[in-house]
Amino acid sequence: MSSATLYERLGGESGIAALVDDIVEAHMQNPTIQARYLPTQDDPVHFEELKGHLRDFLSAGSGGPAEYRGRSMPEAHRGMNIGEAEYMAVTDDILAVLDRHGVDPQTRQEMLGIAYSLKDEIMHL
Image 1 (cartoon, rainbow, N blue to C red):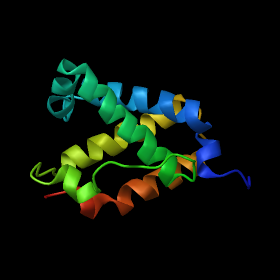
Image 2: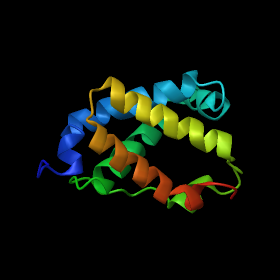
Image 3: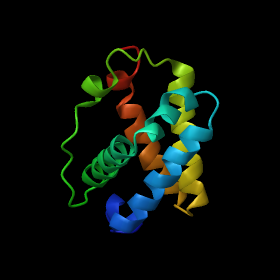
């Protein structure tokens, strides 16, 4: 097993930036969740801010140097009433993008574990 951090295994800053771009694009193409994501591109400043928060969240959460300054998961998702199908669509998109980027199975499994650890902070709020 590698002693590299999750952040390093995700490709560091540039790897995470590429992952976030592709994950957001996958969400916008996914019929189950695209209605939540497509409107964000109508406001380019807000769209880039959201992607920046995602990059920082992923970097900070994987042992990288970024500091996440966005809202907490419950604050960010309150009032959205995200159900199981939407939650799974997001998770599936993330795993598919990790796979396309050649991220190893152990790292994908760790990312899945993180996603599931946040489930109660995201769903049905």
